[in-house]
Length: 87
Image (cartoon, rainbow, N blue to C red; front, top):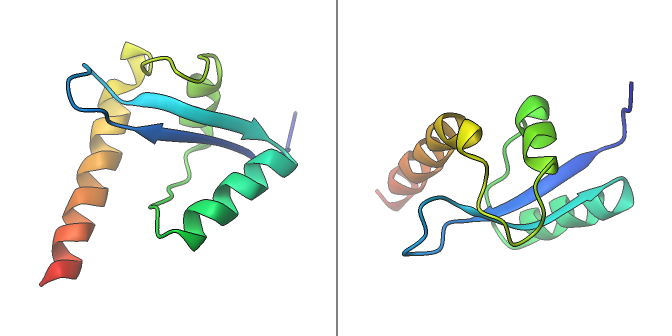
């Protein structure tokens, strides 16, 4: 089993049907992506199965439809957390 760290960066772009994969990486590249996200206040969640599913697609692709439900839960959590921080 591959235990190298993996990361996928997503962004919802207005007008698209689902989030877009901005970047993905393994090993050192994943570590840099996670460091930069933390440094810039970008929310990070950990879901190894979802990252493997998203890893099949390429940067620039809309995320696969079979990941939409899981991503909706994650994005909802992030939005609720941001709303809670503004209070």
